[in-house]
Amino acid sequence: MKVFVTGVCGQLGHDVMLELHRRGVECVGSDCLPAYGGVASAVADLPYVSLDITDSAAVETCLSELRPDGVIHCAAWTAVDAAEDAENREKVFAVNVNGTRNLAQVCKKIDAKMIYISTDYVFNGQGTEPWKPDCKDYAPLSVYGQTKLQGELAVSELLEKYFIVRIAWVFGLNGKNFIKTMLNVGKKYDTVRVVNDQIGTPTYTLDLSRLLVDMIETDRYGYYHATNEGGYISWYDFTCEIFRRAGYATKVLPVTTAEYGLSKAARPFNSRLDKSKLVEAGFEPLPTWQDALARYLEEIEE
Image (tube, rainbow, N blue to C red):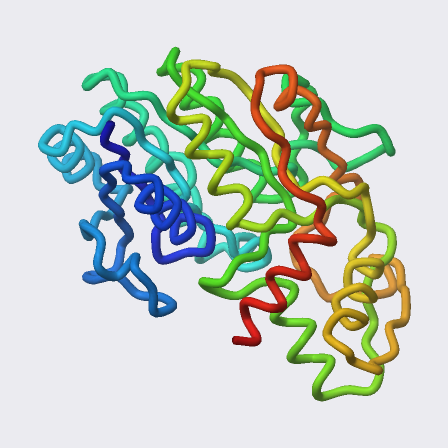
């Protein structure tokens, strides 16, 4: 089997490539940079193609030549607040919608299966019930959410052999994330303010990458939700646990989203994702977020 991975200079794509390599699966990574850029690792030594996914001709040439059996599409515009800026909206649409469609069109042509990474932002973030993967009550609140939903629709309309996997609150070794930000802030300040009315579950890319490789080797297609286990928490709860495990004495003050008031894009209050379909389909659930956090802190301290 040969797998093509987009966005390997990001958090998730990096770990997906490592997992494929660890299992001995032939893989080719891609991103928009001329050469691999990221944390020093075995990924830098794996096959890499510089590819602008918004260029439909380039995507067709690349995938038609490589002819992978599967594509794991991790590349995306994920700067949620910057996506709201008028000067960025065309680019966000080009990457998250057109880029995804370009990949899906060639997957259809070469009969390759595709995994599209999506987000809880496709929903309106209201209520307290966990969102089910096959729920179609879409009402994204932000440009980012709107474009990720349009990417979902492009995949589902063009392909039959697809997985749409929604994730939330992602952290990994390669790139910026909430944990790294909080650790840096916690070193500088005695007190930090963190919202306590946005509820969800973190997702460790190392754990998620194992699930995605499990998926691409099957034909159990459809919509899935995937975050770590361990229950639903607020960003405030998560920060308290980060500082506790890191040995920080920094005080954490809970505030509402309205009181925090620094975000351009509307954030979902309810990011609870129902993951029961994973087990029903025979996939192994991810470890708890508490376990994932402990392993991650050990990893970044080395």
